[in-house]
Amino acid sequence: MKPNEQTSRRLLQAVLVSLNGVVEEPLTWAGPYFHDGSAARSLEILRRCDALLMGRGTYEIFSRQWPAASGPYAEHINAMRKYVFSNTLEHAGWNNTSVVPGDPAKAVTGLKRTPGQDLMVYGHGRFGQTLVDAGLVDELSLTVVPVFVDGATFHRPGTPSRSWELVSAGPGADPGLVSLRYRPSPTE
Image (tube, one colour):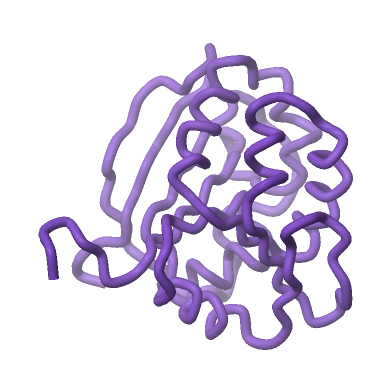
């Protein structure tokens, strides 16, 4: 193996989280804090990925939002390969999107073993939680938004606890935001 050659793709998960740990429905509360800086940083990270992985809920939101949008971010996300993990969705109408039924952890494990760039997951719904629980997430990026809201929190009762190691912490790309990056603890 050559230096710096990876034997598997990394799975990145990017999550918007409120001050009180809520991850549900970020489109309803995070928007006022996202401006050009956040868009530029998101695009920079997404360009290192060649596939976007989603559960059905994220797919339904994104497939309505992004095909009609314009600009560099929209162009990139629309052009890239996308996988939606669902046992109920039969067809995906968004270009370059495949529906993957069955066990998502098993399917994502297989995708990580294929050649390519990093894989991206946005959000932390059931699909995102499944990937964390299965130990498949290689980097967890949290953007803390300075609001308190009601909704489902990041860690759901009854799910296994995992230890994470801080990679970086600092101001977000736009005022008021905080950026935290973690990787699984080596002791896991």
